[in-house]
Amino acid sequence: MTASFTSPLAEAMSEDLLARFLRYVRIDTQSRPDRERSPSTPGQLDLSRLLVEELHELGIADAELDEHGYVYATLPATVADAPTIGLIAHVDTSADAPGTGVAPLVHRAYDGGVIGLPREGTRLDPAVMPRLADMVGHDLVTSSGDTLLGADDKAGVAAIMAAVRHLATHPELPRPTLRIAFTPDEEIGHGATLFDIPRFGARCAYTVDGSRRGELQDESFSAIEVRVHVKGVGIHPGYATGKMVSALRVAAQMVAELPSDRLTPETASGREGFIHPTLFSGTAERAEVRWIVRDFDEGLLQSHVELLREVTDRVAGRHPGAEVEFEAIRQYRNMRAYLEDDPDVVTAAEEAIRAEGIEPLRAPIRGGTDGSRLSEMGLPTPNIFDGGYEYHSVREFASLQDMAASAAVIVRLAEAWTRR
Ligand SMILES: [Zn+2]
Image 1 (cartoon, rainbow, N blue to C red):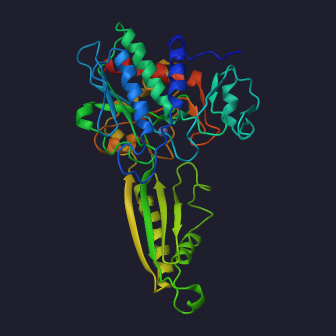
Image 2: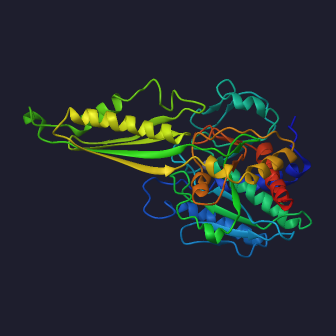
Image 3: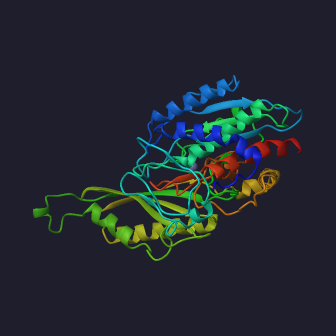
C-alpha cells in the first residue's frame, strides 16, 4: 500500500516534482575541491541552464544565470506589502561518492525490506539504516548502486521548482515576492562566496537542504580549516644517516599524537565537535596535512585549534631540521546568533511546517550550509528539510512523500509571510 501524502497539496505537486527530480539527478554536477573558477565543474552549468529554461517556461521572465554560475529568479507577489523572501538550493553534488552516470530507480510503495540495487552489490538494509523503517509505503528513489543519488541537494532544487510552479499557476494563493537562487559549489564550501546578496534583495531566505521530514535547522557548526605544511630535508636514503628529516614522518607523528578516542567524527555526536584530517600528502621533502575543525561553540572551536597547534609545535620541536607552517582558515560560523536576532524567520518556518501537519524537528546541523555563511553575511537563512537521506553515499535515497511535503511547506511558508 502506498503511504499517504502529508496533504492533498503535497500529493498534487508530487508527480511534477518526481519528474523534475529524475531529470536533475541524471546531470553530473559533482563539484571539485581546489576550484580555479566558479563553478568548479562545467556540469553544474548544464543543470543551471536547464533550470533557467524551466523557470522561463513557468513565465518567470527574469530568470538568469550569472557569470559565476548562480541562477536568480523572481516570482512576483500576489499580495501587497509583504517582505521579499528567498528560497535557495545548491546544484552541485558531493565528491565523496561517484557522481557520474547516475541512473535513478523508483521503488513504488516500499515494503520495509532490504532493497538490493543492481550495481556493485549495494543494499539498503533497514537493519543498518533505521530511517528506512519510517518509509514503509513511501515511493523511494535510489541510484543504481554505483553512484550517489544527488538528492543532496537536487531534492531541494526539485521541491523549490515544484512549489514555484504550483504558486505560479495558482495566483489566487497569497504569496510575497519570492526570490529564488540556485547556487554552485556548496559542497566545497563556496556556495555563498559569490552570492550577490544586494541583488537577491530578500529580507531573509531558506535553504532547502536538510534531510528528514520536519527538519528545521537554525544552528550549524562553526568551522575552521587548518593546513600544516612541513618542509623536511630530502636526501638519498642510502646516505641519509643523521641528515634526512622526513617531512612525511613528521606529518604522520602530528596525526598520530592527536586524540583518536574523542574529538573525532567517528566518536563525537550531538553537540560535540571534532578535529578531522581530510588530506595527507607529500614526500620526504615536503608534506601537507589538512584538517577540518568543527564545533557549535566558538570558544571550544578555538580550543580545538589550539590543541592542534600545540601538537604541531611539540612534534616540530622534536625535529629541528623541519620547517613547519600552521595556517588556520575560517570557513563559516554557527548561524544561530544571527537568527536569534530575527526570530520571525524561524517562527514563520515552524508555522509552515505545522500547517502541513508535521511537527518541526529542531536539531543542530553537524555541518554547514550556504545559510551558515549567508547569515553571517547579513541574509538570515535557516535550513529546511528536502526528503533526501544517507547523503554523500551510494546508499543515498529520497522519499517522494517527504520531498512533496517539503514542496508543500514552501507553499505554506509563502503564505505565512503574507500574514507578517
Ligand atoms: Zn547539501
